[in-house]
Length: 258
Image (cartoon, rainbow, N blue to C red; front, top):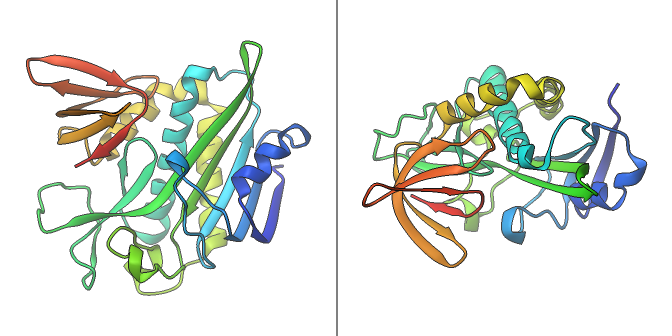
C-alpha cells in the first residue's frame, strides 16, 4: 500500500521529496494544503493557495530508463485529465510538455468542455501543471519525483485570471479533492506498473488530447525561435515540428506559444 504524507503547509512537496529521496519507498506521495514555494517548469513560481491540490510522487523504477522519463509526465497529465473527465464531466486538453489546459469562452462565461480548436472565441487557460525531475546513479535512474499542482477549489488571483482557471469555477461548486487525488493516483499507478507495454498507448492518447497537434506554433528553444506546425510526438516524448521547406525537427525541451 502506498504511503501518503499530508502537510497543512509546506514550502514545496517536490523539494521535500527530493531532499529526502533516499528514505522514502517507491510511490510515496507527499500532499499539502498550501505551498509557500511551489514551482513549475523553468523555475516559475506556482501559486499554491488553500483549496488547490498539490502533491508529489517519488518513483524508484527498475524498468524505466532516462529516455523514458518524459513519458511519465505524459502519464501524469493523462491521469489528471481522465480523473477530471470521469468525476466532473469536464474535458481538459494538453499543452506540451507539462500543462493541463481548459478552454474558456471568456472570464465571465462558462467553460467549453471540448478540445475542438475550431471555436476561435475560446481561450485556453491553465488548470494544472506538472514538474518531473530525476537523479541518476551510474547508468541507471536512482529516483524520479513527479509533482502536480491542480486548481480545484482555490480562488485564482485577479492578476492570474487571464491565464488560469479552476475546476470549481467550471462547475460552480466546490469539489472533493480527496476523491480527485485518489482517482489520479489510481490512474497513474496503472500506467506506472504497466509502463513497458503502455508506452505506445500513452503517446497515442496524449496526442489525441493535445491542443497543439496540427497547429501552427511559435517554439522557443535555446534562445532560438522557430515557426512551424506540430506533427506529433515521438515514442520518447519529444515534440515533432514541421518547418518551412519541408524541414523536420525534434525537440525535447522548449516553450510553445500558440
